[in-house]
Image 1: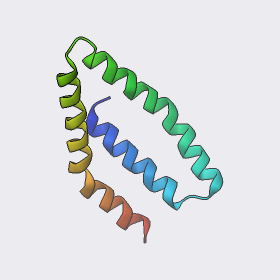
Image 2: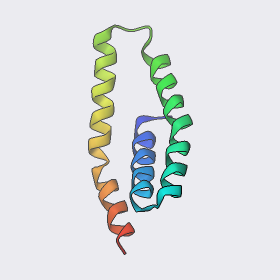
Image 3: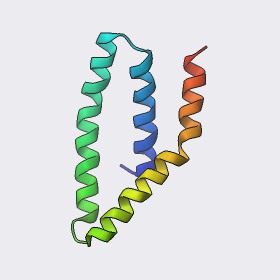
Image 4: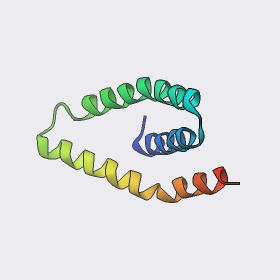
Length: 82
């Protein structure tokens, strides 16, 4: 799973979590668990051969991807308020 898709997925689930009740929030957390582990394994697979510096660069790239998707989050937030 690429970082852009991952960031959009996390933001989408975040919005679902925010607007849901207790049951829906639990379902969102349960849905996110296997996706998180898959993303974590994917990151490990992509970086295990490289130096710590390279892994840190990848983490920085992921942070920038999440930052670049903030308009997507804002759009989701605006749609949810209607």
